[in-house]
Length: 133
Image (cartoon, rainbow, N blue to C red; front, side, top):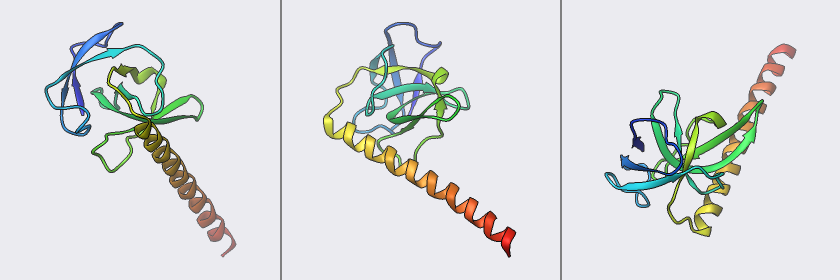
């Protein structure tokens, strides 16, 4: 879901949503308040993606890999977004977040980290097997 904003938000800002990746929580064309508060798992955060677009997706969690990295996903999306660093985070949308949404986000984060760890382990084992064969 992209965000229509002319510049990077400063303090509290109203932004207009474009797209459907966060339905039914966020609707295309509606405006929401963006604030500069520390995000919590389950919050809907706005960040600048690798192509420079502003995106509003649910925060699944964060981890350390040389710097703090965040994982997000749209509620209507099947895949997790590429991780982004703290500097790309612009703020948190002021929408109610229920406990079940926070728990669901945390579970998705744990699954994604497990998937990434398994993929890395598989590559290491495959490379090790090649060396001994």
